[in-house]
Image (cartoon, rainbow, N blue to C red; front, side):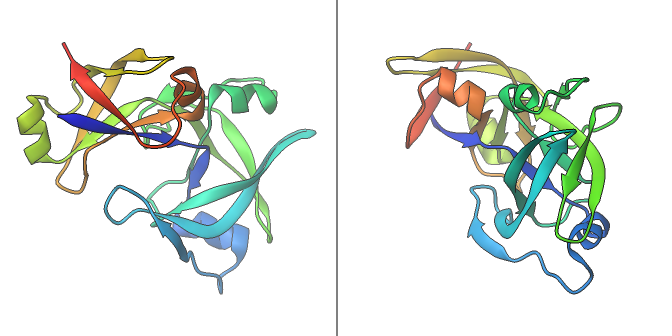
Length: 188
């Protein structure tokens, strides 16, 4: 089965409470573009990430709101921001004991947890059955091409709320020379 490969650029997930702190009570998180995972979208709102005199501007907020806020960046972003404590490599949502980063919106600046997202494979229960994989199992995916790579330690995330896609961050995507529509293959 061909697995769609997607590059997940730096982004932020916010709780409704943190969104209100950053944008005010009268603002809404409006859909700019749907993402591949059902119900998820890139919003029309952006924020800036700040560490002392370093910043990364115009970081997209993804929706819908989450229970807990988190920033997801790449290793290169962490170097650019000169973070004293590097964010932990984590599955999205696992924010305990990781770096806090300043996030600036139009109304205020707050600190929220920051992670480097673990590469992961989304799939529905039906797709998981076809691929013979289980939730949280670690798998490997091969990507062909001039800079083809085998990615190991990919965490599987299985739910009927998901559709099949393998998510890498920008550093990983660049290492594999991924440009445009790309597919991978599950390997032993």
